Amino acid sequence: MTPEIRAVFQIFGIGFLVAILHTILKQSGKEEFAHWTTLLGFVAVFVIVIGYVDRLYDEIQRVFLSQ
Amino acid sequence: MIREIGAALVFVACAGMGFRIARDFRDRPRHLRSLTHAILLLQAEIEYSVTPLPRALARVAERAGPPADALLERTCAALQQADVSVEAAFAAGIESCRNRMALTKQDWSVLREFGATLGTSDRAHQSQQFAVVLAHLNRLEQEARDSQRRNERLWQYLGVLFGLLIVILLY
Image 1: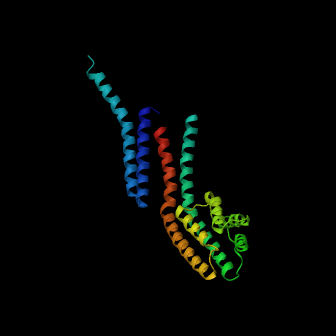
Image 2: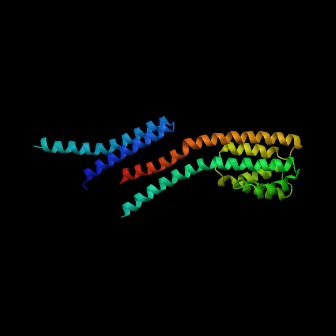
């Protein structure tokens, strides 16, 4: 499994679990915690994605701007 | 290999924590019920059989179910020592059972208040105190059932899901 595919599955899993957590917390009347978890999941995914975007930009720079 | 073992450990730890917290929510109504039952027995011993307090405590401790019997047993044992007030003996009993019962601070303070009134007045006043503590315990039990319904399942899920989340994040 390449790191990229692993990241896709990781993000999928995080999204899935955060969705379940949100539903469960909301059902038991803890809405503010539900929102915090969602935010936390969002930030976690963001951190993962930022690494890849960083690499993407480096790659673009390398391909187009490195005369 | 080490990775899998670590992931399993993290998951089991988180799930275990969740189940541990859920167990407290599940046990609290049961423990309160057991205490109510024990105090009813104690009331019967004191009001109808007119048993002296140390003997009454010992007899109720024999008949009451766990975990309330341990509390009464400890209180009774503490009472056997020379010059100890009932209040102090009851507090000692509470202190030694504290970690084994899933009760909140509020529950303990109700019990401690009851212990402070135990054996300080005649029978008529004592029966009022019994009524007060029983009403208190019933209210607390209602509340405990309510919070069990809301929280028990929630904490089980939370533990498992957060375990999975951490494993996925770190894997």
